[in-house]
Length: 143
Image (cartoon, rainbow, N blue to C red):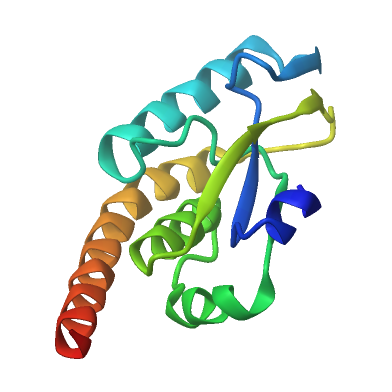
């Protein structure tokens, strides 16, 4: 991931869903199915070009990401969806790469948090659209 930041990317996220990824120990079927369903919703509502926003492997350059962090409002399960969406909306270069991944049996997602995350996707979509419009207006004023 670090070489990609050094080559000009602002954020690099790992993905279990890319063909080149290697899953060494899978999650239980119910967790994997729930994750895939959430990723489908993320793609339909917010980030159509990303396959796995919840993998957990993320590396970013601090300075470009500060305006993103200043806008973030989600502090639950979908916080990273908001981070990636706002980064893109503000013009940062975000890429997704394959990873080698091993499930942690101690990882938990509570049903309440998952339901809240679905509702958060709608909020994220609205915030990122506003951020895109603000960026376009600011760029238009500079032209």
